[in-house]
Length: 338
Image (cartoon, rainbow, N blue to C red; front, side, top):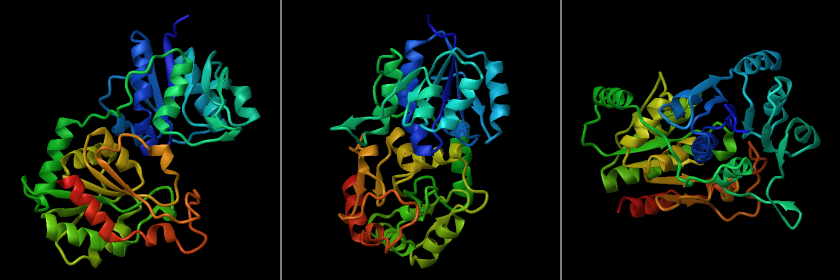
């Protein structure tokens, strides 16, 4: 029986939510007449706004499980597609009585909560990292949804783009000025952070050598990092201080930029979706999770024995990031700008 109402639980991280858009597209193509609601952190609403692959965004502001169960019961969904792996993501749909629940089963509890349980990717009996795009597409494929391409998909609201352009103009950024958008933070933890001194050296070199204006766009809680980078620079720069850009505004900023310089965080996937070139600084995470659409990306890593470790904080000397020289960034940027 074809589902009439579908609930999709989004991943929590910004980059993962963007990497789920091919699976959303496949789900919509397979069920064009169904109502599809996507549930996730409230901030993700602006990120995914404008996509035709769902009908409604359902904010989940970390409410109690019972409050979530009540709201899911009211949806009367007959299929739940659960991209996160946590038991919490599956518990409320189970208690709400959604008859079909699909996702990965990493442990016995999660397997009990699902009707369509997928094993995480394995080789020779061991779990192996794969592109998150492919990982999410395997869930929709299990449900009989043919793939509709792996390209990431986002939409920039023209009104928000115009407002961002006016805001940049008020801050002294000319309409024809080439912008180097810099996102120096990382919600995951300090282990993903390239040192501010390295950011400053790279930004100065790109400003001098390529005529780019470094515009630093910190996420909430990252303003101190952005100001630290700007304070170390000798060239002109701009820090987008409070209020920090929303995700809807960040999309417009990425679309406006000639180049994005970022840690391995959500803005990277926004750039991929909007076909903007980006230089990515990667340390503690496994590159196989994001090894896709690399044509306009330069992913820079240091070959150190302890990486990837996936620690949020480095327990030793953070060598995977501190040894990543600014000169490598400048050379990679030059390739992309050419």
